[in-house]
Length: 626
Image 1 (tube, one colour):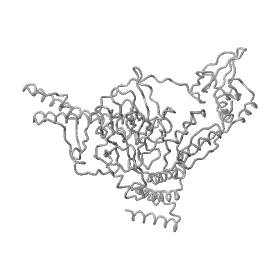
Image 2 (tube, rainbow, N blue to C red; image 1 turned 180 degrees about the horizontal axis):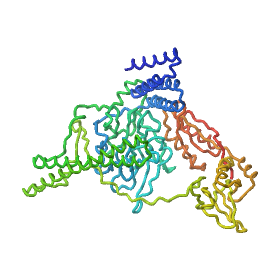
Image 3 (cartoon, rainbow, N blue to C red; image 1 turned 135 degrees about the vertical axis):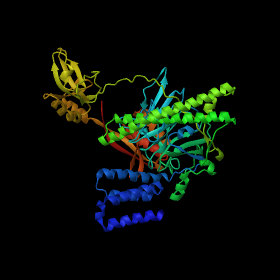
Image 4 (cartoon, rainbow, N blue to C red; image 1 turned 30 degrees about the vertical axis):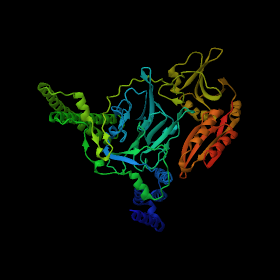
């Protein structure tokens, strides 16, 4: 494999050198990208990066080059992450169906609500198959799609008799792609989740975020690194409450419909080291248990099942009924998903395909229900025979036992199948409808809900003044329109709230095109009209704003550095935002805003003392003085 890819890259390089016209050959570029993808999956990140760079150099399309730049970043991330690798002790590994793998986690019974459900109404993500929502819990962290279909992490808590309106966590916990399976630690101070858009090496990686008490929010998430993350998809990480194990799932080396669940000895202070040999890193990330044998992939068993043949016959029938119920539920779930898809915008071809699939599923439902009814009749007949013959049995206990599938016991660790919970029935607070004060031209205009203007310097566009109140129809679709009454009794109407003269000028033509040809700009300071020259002078009286840029070794910002930045905000500089960016293959953290150069440099010194070698202070803009 190594020799093959090395020869492929060498051949491509020679081709570009000898025949520049090949730069326009889509086949060559596609081959380079495929080679890069294969090399990255083999943990050969340096060679993968070179393949992507060669493809990017030959790519004339600018959008495609951006996609290739993302792939280059994945490879470079892998190179960086190879310097901080854990070597945990693997206890067990077992392969499960993607549809219900989460039920085999060492968690209490009936804590998982399969999707689609009340929180994730679409259930369309290929890996996020359930929401962790135990009965009686006081808060739920869950992943659900936004209006564009991207999965974001939300939180809701129980207050009095209602659940709060679900809210997103914060900007650092979101990417342009999906975040799934948020799992809170037992003490509520650590959140684990998977993301396909944050700093990683491809697919879903596993991240950890710690609660920042001083800021009252979750800290910058950190990739847990190899071998927990990999170029494949890795997700649903937990530490068991007894402190013995860490558990997570991955589809590395798995068929498309399956995942492996790994059980690893818990290590609260892992020793990380650099692994430069890709074959050694690849073998480590296989996470093969020390005692791996046939039992790891072997059959299943039930715990404490009575040897009575009649009881076993009953339990076998119960299992059959359960499977039929699951099949029916899965069919109905898929049907709901297809119907939801049909309600969205589809091409004619996509709609025809979805309608055909819906028809097939609808045809399956009566047959599944009929088969289930017959199986239930057989089960009831057996129960009647038990009663008639005086056989003592507890149906609830036996059905629960039949649902318990135990696998991998011969390996020394038993995966036990738990039951999903009943359908969610959560009652939420009614969300407070907030008025949108951004400038818009709508089919119907809107008056501002509150005519009070923000303090400081703002600009508005005056559209007209009248002797009596205006009507919505007279607004010609403008929003938000503010009403002011003069001492003489006339009504003045102005639209929008703009912070700079350039912003208000950019909307003036839109107002004029809406029918207000005499509209003009009005500057206001603390709600009072001022002269335009005075407003422009105020804009010129601005103070510089600074930020610090931090480049930690290994791409992970030390906890002490985070505290130093947080303390800067607590000491009077205001709220500190920390963002992570990727530049030239390096992970850089940017913090700010700092209102003074002195404070920025003081914080930068504290960050350096915390072990970050590369820290700089830059001026990034200005803030208007008041």
